[in-house]
Figure 1 (cartoon, rainbow, N blue to C red):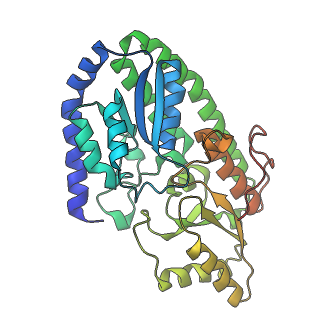
Figure 2 (cartoon, rainbow, N blue to C red; figure 1 turned 180 degrees about the vertical axis):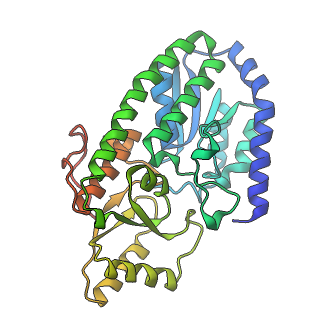
Length: 328
């Protein structure tokens, strides 16, 4: 990703910050009930639904199994964004190819990144993305709680008559996120220490690894736009063999080709590696299912990873709501 693109995205964020207050104030004067919110990825849409409650109709654009790194807004998407009373996106360049659409919409509607108020000291900056932060904050439930708090604050300013409700909804939901965070820490800790290596298709799990004490190895870089080479595959094959790692994971929104190549490479060296399950990285599960919620998404990932790497986790997850294990 070019430095010019990083620079332009930073300018875009600064421009929105300057223009939005007046837009939000004018929108609030004639606010319908319920008003309409359009979001980019499902993880953002879900926390907005939890906080807004019955006061808003919330629609997401980027659906199940779709990679937001590569997603380009269609005319229909732009129309939905322009029809919204307020727009939320994740930020930190996750939706980089949608920047032009968000700029266009930002001239007429208030547009907010749910990550914009998170302390930069909590963000990760991978060496290969010098000058740019890892955008996958939702992989740490304690960080995504801060995103939900930002939504409550923003909606309280946008719709001050219902600010107390948004705060109350956040307080309730925040307790659920705290419980999820504790479940993740407790469950991953049951995995034998030498087996706590998470090998996935791309580097979407750095915050997950930091929060829940795992070592993470992605075949591709932090964005799925990067390409994995033979050297990357061979490096990870050697790691799997040398450390006797028994499972790797595919992702719902990324091709499984490279992960399967790892299994084949390890087998050629006499070490059997299985695919431990399909994880949700940049998109949630099917709409209308438990895995199609943010909590269900993380519950699925935690439970799948722990069980595949030799840990102990309930087969149906934190509250017994998970579907049967999804093995490709």
